[in-house]
Length: 406
Ligand code: CTP
Image (cartoon, rainbow, N blue to C red):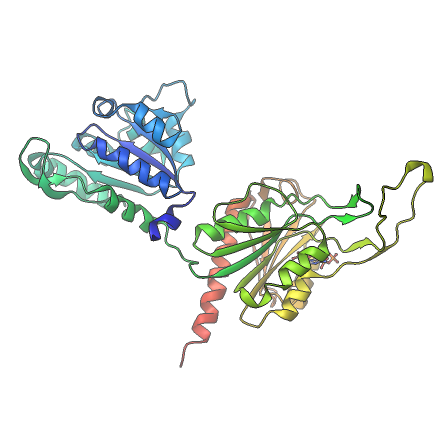
């Protein structure tokens, strides 16, 4: 089902206001969790009269916020507003709609909405008279102008025993609206990512390695999977596997080369984010080298170049992104971009603070083979991954446009 992959790993803040339809919000929370989303619930005081917060806590396995001054988070509205990818309010009562339309923030839910820059979906539920009041009509118009997404209401039986406009749409309809926020722009794209620092054996215990943590490659794999790509991660690191990503665990440059080259003909995109050793011991010892034997002399030889081998094996349509870890200046990266046969090179200065190995952030420059450079400010590795996937999508679109019959 399309919503399942669109929702995977998304952070959804579910706001529940005080209406009878609040019971349907519990089902919505469960459907979101089943679809792989992370769900945090914020309830108004009124909502707790209809459904117990314990219900949502059990479904989401997360604390439920009902009070701006609760003990769970120091500043729940700002923390949740920054945490989530989208806010969904179901049911949205006339009162809550009025508060949001007018920028009020007197309770945890309206304050969170006021504090966020993420998309907000509201699913109104109220009696027909309330829905048709000029004040409600005005508020809905204002919300729409503000870019809020209104889903429903529909006509049908209402809580008072009557029937008419004002009934909340069914959770499945809300699910579809949420999924629409996260279009699967890379659906059907087969994407390979290499990640981590390889280890080249000296003996069964020791190796030559490097400081790469693998975080950048994992962030790329995660972002591509979120966009619906079919992702294989060939990794020498051992971090938690992002959802829906297939992992091939390797250790040395040789193993990474074999795994990568074996897929050269069954991928559309390769992102070479691994820090591959350039040299390895010629003849690793079969047993542990003993200190008592004195300092060993380790003779090195070149490792296979995973990137170059892939470019040779992959057909022209395969888009290849290389990385260049430089120290001091990224000047050398321009030469790499022009000569490595890549479609794009991601350069960073790993000696700079907050950029490169082991850090949570990175400051990269995208360089094309023609030497066009797009320097990005320092940002989280997840954000770098998002910018990179935008560039990869553009490369794929260009290629597809080029193949259109003229
Ligand atoms: N790479 C590779 N196999 C190697 C070495 C590097 O696939 N044996 C890839 C890296 O994954 C990266 C790109 O080549 O995508 C550039 O790596 P980098 O270490 O920056 O440069 P090198 O080509 O090794 O050149 P130098 O050591 O001179 O900087």
